[in-house]
Length: 139
Length: 145
Image 1 (cartoon, each protein chain N blue to C red):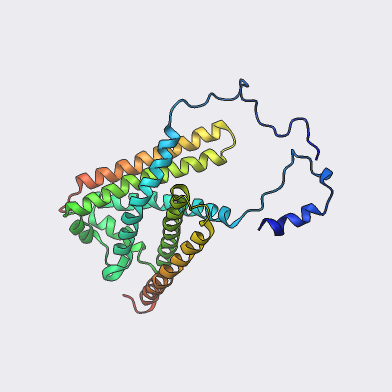
Image 2: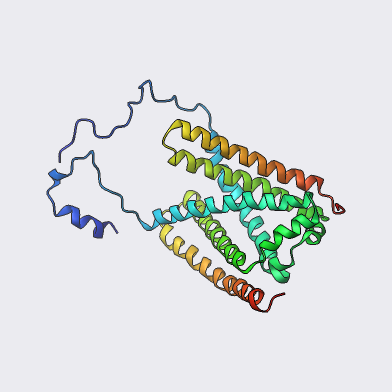
């Protein structure tokens, strides 16, 4: 078997261009979070889709009055709030991984991640605001 | 799997393949389950973004909310919802498989039968779901309001 001089173009461990290794366990915690939130989301999301798409006529019956009736109960408020936060963070962290994998330059990576973080803050923030300030008597 | 893909390479002299080039990984079933997990996850994320925005209309007016939600009741959108369910169900069941591979000592050994279990469970739920939703879409299209 022949081997070439520099087998693969990977930076040498101590080269100046290579960023220093992270000193914290963020990626470990994100890995654990994906699994824990995944188990909870399995029940929350599949339950949500069963109710919204199949029971009592499915999507055809959904309107403002239906939402108002559900959010009168703290149980469904808590369900939806938990689902919103977990899905936003689980999906956001998943997309962060996808961006890290496929973005080729640091500039692209930076801007895609900025866009991602803004959209997560927007959706989770807006959803939380709506859940806490919902008014069934709005005209 | 390795036995069938390696034969073509082995017929040529080794010298043609310097180590640096390596061999092209053509993918095992496990790789495709990973690809499918990514695609279904990204699609679901984009729907989540839209869905939070449309639900936020309850804070604008009942009329605005009802108008936008009525688009979800259109037969074409019911097909889209079926697709969303397909993506979420696969992602959910394959996610359990990923966790079993990670945490169960026998997980890696059974990754392939577990993938077939995921596909089987997915089919068992998707077939009645598709019948239910397609029936509703057709009713909406012809006998609807």
